[in-house]
Image (cartoon, rainbow, N blue to C red; front, side):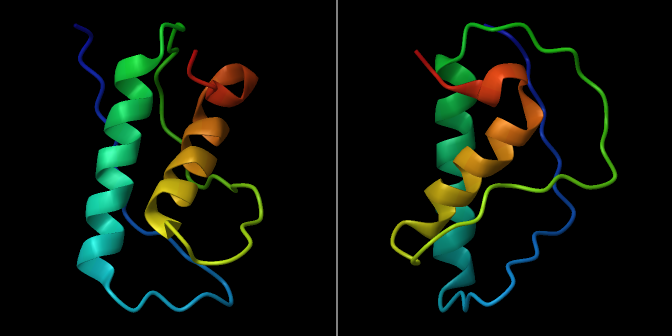
Length: 82
């Protein structure tokens, strides 16, 4: 198993209210963990001062949607898991 570490200082969601921050955070972490675990691609590593994700519509499963957007911003080819 690879050791992958993702550190996020701040997530800014324009125009979206997050009613339960703990649930959002838990969903984000679980989804990023799942995406990283199921990905077989190479990772170059590094840091970024800012990543911009794809626009999101609606707030259903917001943590998972943000995780997919973050992952797609970090991994070449959009980071789609097989």
